[in-house]
Length: 357
Image (cartoon, rainbow, N blue to C red):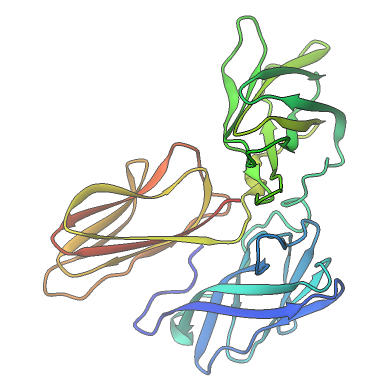
């Protein structure tokens, strides 16, 4: 869904408000947009330091004037949310850690009211589904695995009606850090290929004397059920030995419910022609992208070699700034890249927002 329509009056929106949390009914309040303008963008709550994360179970509710725009949880991204000069965005939070200062970021576009299309919130994995890594209600099985060295496969037997594996764990000894990769495969004879093989979702950052917590949400492929049990080979690779719990759920989930972290940005500038320059590499969730093509150049944004956004600016003309907002849960998988390709002697600037974790 596009956030606004670019015009000569469009500007980047980057509004932030803060509060010291009490834990109950904490209210973030933004100023009204200026007269004649509409603000449109996404919302995310952040803490000022990595040691003070937004609680996974926190719940935020957004209201614009008297209209409820929805709710979201943890440190996920919500929106887009839109307000005009007569409306005020107010967000009420439950479950923040008392005494911690939190920031609420509203990032998007500020546009003249006459050129903006009406928006509505995109589908959101809501409050507690997106960020909670404790077993969901359908869990029928759990087993702890402790003291497994990096790169060593462990065989885990789960009931035949399990449809999703959820692995949650942490490192055991220094050097500290999350796994670099988790591989899951079905232990047939001969062994099958991996149905999950990439870095895990990483929930808590590491630091001196701390251990990062990681989570994997992996649907078991359809068509392998039958018999009394399913044997899964689990191999975790990283800088330390690991301990973890394996949960089994009768429902199927995709790991992209976890790609709801605070929006991050990447930007690159190319002057002169180039075959391709990687801006963002997977895994991540793509949010928005914009090109600023200066006169005398053609800029193309390519997703695995396929052009998804292009801007042409002939010499002697004005710059062009095409943009795109990706559909909800647009995941760039591990090993794939979003690249900028430029043709001509001029300059192209590419800006991308993404999220992971």
